[in-house]
Length: 475
Image 1 (cartoon, rainbow, N blue to C red):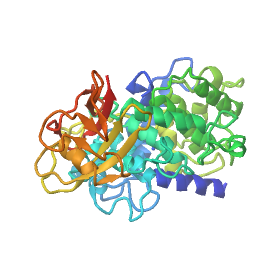
Image 2: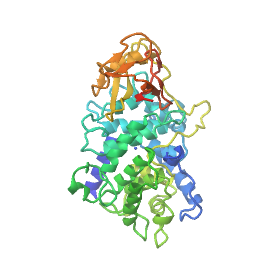
Image 3: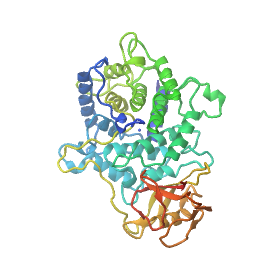
Image 4: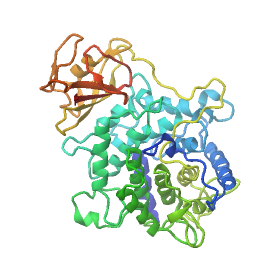
């Protein structure tokens, strides 16, 4: 048990977690009456689970801290219908969990001196669930742009070293799941497709996935899959637009079904039945709009994965134990368990607060002149070679222009090479050529902001703080 738990918690620290048809797939909270766990049992589990997570808040209002912390609580709170801004220590609303978490994310020292991509993916998913626009945390912090920095130019579609496959899975979860405040997927379809291609290529022969890269390695592809990562990879595909009838999702369902324990509803993970593995698997099913209490996931003995999770919960205390044999709750198991029972995937849109005057969302509204920041940029010239980068820019006003962003990208982009040349090189007119690719007839350079429709790209187009920009050549 110990090695498995250590491996899983290391992964959580580094991750430190809408169906194709609807945003609500991350927050399915009502299960059919035929389910073995009744709506009343689920409601009680949610109420008691939220109460336990409330008790984990520190006196200063924080959940996140150094090392492995409890910030994944925000994804569980949102799935259970509790707004992070409503979670306060005692009666001090100035220390509400959302404000404290936003202040942490905005600090220059977060996440560490040597961050990895999953730090920013974790932050994105939990900021979104807390009601913090992840692209507009502060005048200097844009978590979407932070993720873009880790695009692998030599292996397009991967984020972070490809050997750590979980970085790409959680990039898909974060970039697709953490939508704009208006509910729009903010990244272009070309980027979504690139990630989907890599996730599919890493699916093992048994239908599941593991934390490490398997693509191109017959031995790894033939290795046994992991329950946890199968749930996450399923969710990543579904939030990227893959329907739950897709053969790869069907194979993943079959893998999970093959691990279902008839007399408890648990999934038999590598180190035995446990709440965390069950929680990740159920969250994957939830994100794909697959009910975890009917059909393939109702055992011959009438048990389901949700039954197992509720059986792991102490009531009225509300915490979940990690192993069936444990006698005390685990914070991490309680977060994973509650999020899954509440119908959540790996993030959820923030609920409306009950605190008087508190908005559903908070975020930086304008650039701060002279304050360095980053913007997320993709460039698609139609050749099949997508360029993805984070552009460092220091605005001179409360807004900037597309021309200024493209100029900055030529010399201050990570990874480099997103933009090599722009025509015209100055002014506010129409972009007639980018990276040597010129407009030709009806095929011209167009721009999309935060997932909106593509329109003619002009140097003078206004760019606001946190905008996710996509340039595309074509009709």
